[in-house]
Length: 117
Image (tube, rainbow, N blue to C red; front, side, top):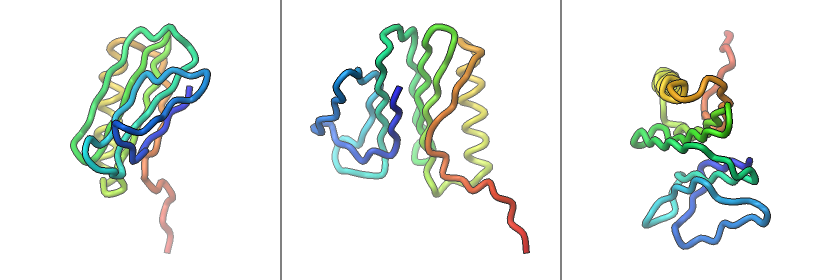
């Protein structure tokens, strides 16, 4: 699997990778923006794809393969930690309805370091 987020792509962009199949592709329809997601797979047995876009904060795709769900997330750097946490919890809750084994990948744009004085 190859998961690319914040791709800045347009519908006319050629994005094929030899040996892989595009199973999810989202992009800006008019201009190149810090938005977009492309997921490539070699494995053919995809059972279900769930897509979500939370306006300008977060977008994700959840792909079920056998007994696993692979969740690819892009979060805007303008989102607060609380917004990201809420959306990720929603993504996990929705995905667990049809799959218990989750793998989460992506660009979270959050700083988890504890700040000290």
